[in-house]
Image (cartoon, rainbow, N blue to C red; front, side):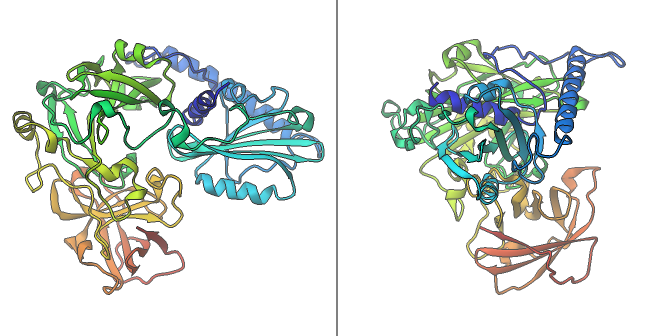
Length: 547
């Protein structure tokens, strides 16, 4: 077993950990196996029948565990530390097989909505009386850190894997195996028994990189002459700066989009092509739940394809519904999650098809990264987003004119803005003080943004990703003041009455009062109260955010 196998196993587990079913990863198929045609009212689909069977199996398993845990004192898992609040989940058998863990051991999976670092620190404290037999950290396939620990206490062995879990929400996956020490005394981590090599010493086909160094591609930006979709299939071109905290965009979106003429048309009708020559370097495969209002049951596939056009310039095409058979064959064995690949591709070559996801996907994201352009005060927190640009800036004049005609924003720059950070000013993005240190950008619920509406840069918007005691949403400000670009540490406390923005339509948010104070140029304290209050004061409930 090589290192790639174990990383793939952990990626699969992280992607499927919240499904609470036993699901066996198989070789990728172009067809979406769980998609169902809309069912007739009152008719039970196969997906629903399978779901009920799986739910029954899970319920029985949970009942058995509960019976074990309620058994005689001293049996089972007494004394085995489990992170408080962690939710027990079923994991695929492959998750344990790939890790080489004996089936005779007790094996349990958990997911918890806190950072990996918090879980690691907690286990370090809770296992202080255990003997550490082996402890290693190694780099996952998205440059995140996976923690492995092997402990012994008397004749009991305890093995723990702690890794990030990003689907369907951010958090931490915990794999625990325990039993008689004889089951673990000869255990070796199945990655060759050596410490993980630094990224620069690993084979390039296994390493996630912000930009990929391919000398044959050259450097610098390219000019796009081809749009990923046919112009007649595009209803609207979206600018930068979309806010959608409910779906993870608490910070303004770093990409433009191409809206589908008919997002409800099924099967996926829209051909997706490469916008320029390059090498496909990444394929991310996600499995999502059909929304109830779609008329479908089960799950659907969703893909993101990243193309290196040069060593300093890339495109990412996101929300592809089906990959072209040629891409699948050249990619090899794709698994759910991140896949590092190397597939040369030509301008105009078909990548796949988009659309066909009623009530789930309204358009295609076209993300562009230019290494020579940077954003934000602390770009190290933003990964590739620190280098994001709108594709319109890199289209030739003919293509730009055709796409600009579908752009509804009037203000300059026409393609919008997503980086509002200003040193010493409230305006821009803020991270809660407890945000994940390893993946601050992915820790959506700890984000807060004081920015502006994507179609009207004079209209203030406050986007709340979570943590604060209020609905996760984007809010307008009564009176549209004070302007966050004018708030400094010298301003003192400011009061915002929050309301529902017009773009939310008939949906109405609860009314809140938010008070904010810049403690220094890179720190603010924030507190929220229900209703509109004249001039509240800070209490012990205030939250701290930093740049």
